Length: 67
Image (cartoon, rainbow, N blue to C red):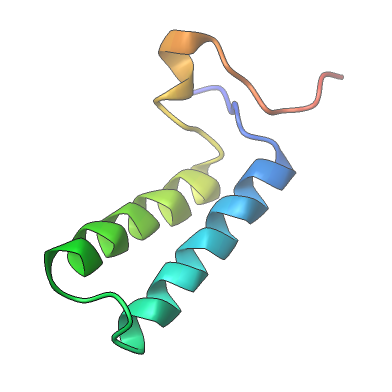
C-alpha cells in the first residue's frame, strides 16, 4: 500500500473522530446514529494511522504532497 494521505488530511480525520467520541460519551449522539458515527470515527483513526484511504484509490485521489 502506497500512502495517499497528507498530514492535513490525517489531522482533520483524527479531530473529527475525537469530536464524535466526545459527543458520544456526553450522550449528545445516541442510539444507532451514535454507533454508526463511532464506527466511522474508528475507521478515520485507522486510516490516519496507516496513511492510506482505500476510497481514494479508485478515484486516483492523493492528498500527499509531491516531492
